[in-house]
Length: 175
Image (cartoon, rainbow, N blue to C red):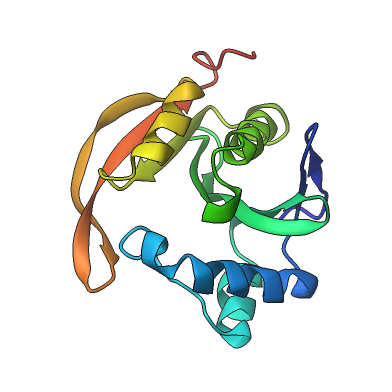
């Protein structure tokens, strides 16, 4: 897991730590309705947040910080080394911070990190079919739609379909 922050013009993407817990739990509480059926786990207690959001894992997670306020997260998980060289992208943002380009800016920075520093060849993102904002964001970053994965994730008591998007380094517009 990365221990270094990633920087954009307006954001600081920090590895999650105990100092982020209260803000992250607050975001989950306030956005529970929007997150239901779209996230693997919604955390509404600090103990859950410490285990779920902060715990070491295979991959990298970043808290999106704007003006010293945690506003969301971006993750790059399921990292596989060569010859597969693949990772899975995930992200979420406080709805109160939406429509300002923060999620796009943060995701674009993590994509750049994945291709340039982690030397990945391919990044995949799986999105709920009704999550139009997220689909619009991922398409704006040149991810292509690969198809529908029926009953891919068990979320909120049911197996849920996901639209699968991917981007390879050859397709990445900033290479």
